[in-house]
Amino acid sequence: MAGHHSVKVALSDEGLGRLHEATERFGMTQMQLVGRLLDWFLSQDRWIQLIAIKQIEEDQTPGIVELLYREQCAKKQVTEAMDAPLWPTAREAALAEKATRSRRRAKKR
Image (cartoon, rainbow, N blue to C red):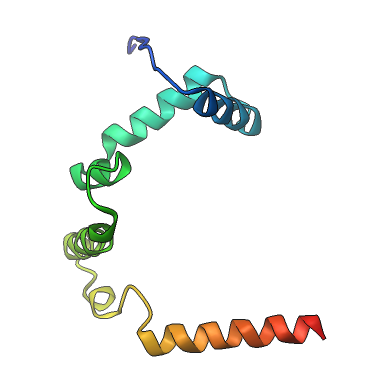
């Protein structure tokens, strides 16, 4: 049976409040929630860890995420997924924004 260990965590008042809200929402103790989050974090690829702790500039994140995605696709030999764009083209994004504005105007009428 695996042992359990405790660590001290320093949180701001705001962070502690948000932790309390999350534990209430999920019906878990603070130790359970923080333990699961740490287990998840430590099981992630190093790049995901660096993104999560904000050690990588925000403008570099999409490129790294795309590289990780392509690496996963290659490992799983999902070649058709590698051909699909991860983000919409500028034209697709503009069309989606136009459609959203049209729906909003229609709701106001």
